[in-house]
Amino acid sequence: MADKNPKSDLGKIVQQTMPDIVEMRLREYLKQKSLKPGDPLPKEVDLAESLGVSRNVVREALSRLRMLGMVETKKKRGMVLAHPDILSSFERVLDPSIIGENTLKDIFELRLVLEMGLAELIYARKTKKDVEDLKQIALKQMDEKKGAFRVKNEIEFHGKLYEISGNDTLKRFQQMLLPIFDYVVKTEPRFISGKVSHLDLANLLEKGSKEDFRRGMYEHLKPHFDRLKR
Amino acid sequence: MADKNPKSDLGKIVQQTMPDIVEMRLREYLKQKSLKPGDPLPKEVDLAESLGVSRNVVREALSRLRMLGMVETKKKRGMVLAHPDILSSFERVLDPSIIGENTLKDIFELRLVLEMGLAELIYARKTKKDVEDLKQIALKQMDEKKGAFRVKNEIEFHGKLYEISGNDTLKRFQQMLLPIFDYVVKTEPRFISGKVSHLDLANLLEKGSKEDFRRGMYEHLKPHFDRLKR
DNA sequence: TACATTTGTTATGTAGTACATAAGTACTAT
DNA sequence: ATAGTACTTATGTACTACATAACAAATGTA
Image 1 (cartoon, helix red, strand yellow):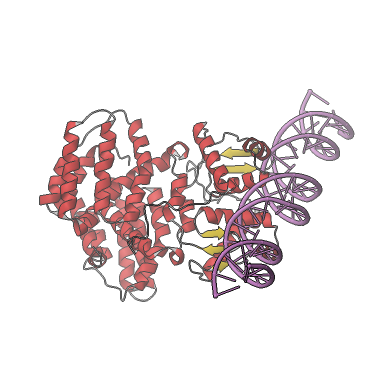
Image 2 (cartoon, each protein chain N blue to C red; image 1 turned 90 degrees about the vertical axis):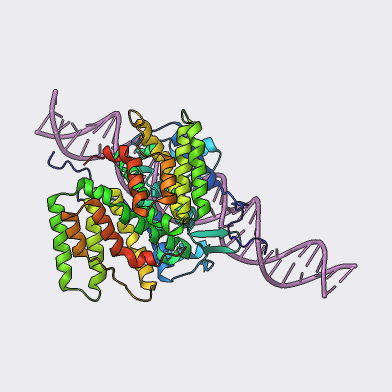
């Protein structure tokens, strides 16, 4: 009972299996040789022999790297190093139902942080057309205000903001986080709207300063900020 | 030449291999049965038989899920579902040398966004001690201002900010992104310091408003913002 | 000579068997 | 009743065999 912190300083003893080791070794190999995408890798049997393990083990390790997009394999041509898609690996794990409560909370906060910080990129890159699009989206939402539409609109509007930021990775990141927000919001007793509407935000973006916009965004998200736990 | 966008609308034809399919099926299985961490899974041979594939294939798929921390296996006891550590999967892929140029740029911008948005959490959770610690760090840096120390100090100071935010996931996320920033900054012709120093920021945090702090952070990061490409 | 077809080679993909190992479980002896 | 032993079982590793796709070379035809 002396330690109520779930993570003690004693790192978990992880029974390293051969595939684990081989995966690590392969990673080191790739890094050390500073191979570039497109460069060929030794074939499986050679790797197996060099490492002194069965092809089975090598294949398990390669299968992992393949999943992460670090290597691509083609029959006969062998394997080549590839640009991993950093988000696809993330995506596989992002399932609200298997993520711990604390992490869910952290990710929800992450969204708030992102949206507050996004103003910089938005103001650096917004165009007249972007603003017009955003206003259209906000206006469209005035009509169909209730029911399942709300969530869809929420996504469309905020998604557009990320799009304006001109950062594809960020945009995709947001898309992936959506199920999490959805999940967290659903667990809230009721949906509380901020004082600043989507249309207000769009207008701020058109005529207001960066600071104005950020203040508006804060008000818009205020119900969530108010729920922050210390 | 009609399409200068590297990603065309034609989704890449991904030759699905059996492990890919089995991995997917297992994921669906876990989600659909809404299994909770600790719940046991069928044994490998049963899975193989149910799916009509060899145990080899099942093991490759399981190996992937194991790597992501979604399942844990113990000899004889079988396999159980586990809370995946969402960041560890990310970590494996985050190597500047194999990430594409565009993604690197995106991630660098992500950091800027995070630090600008962080003010909310920081002001919601900062304590007197936090501010004092931060000032100490900033002061310590006044002395050893040159050479390799700069990077280390930079990390220590900004790391403390994330710590104050009280969001573990965010903090770890930042830690993982460090090599990327380092890499990107190194490719810049020279290091340009902002007008607002670390000590200034610490003082703002102590006495200034949230808006003051954010303005200070903007000035601190301004050299980077100025380099933003449209 | 130029081009289409066939054949061969090679590296990955999948299946199947065998055995090692660790961790429960049941049984036995004192 | 408890300690110790033997048994059972599910994962971990190795090995073999063959299917398949892709490239290369050789062959045949105009």
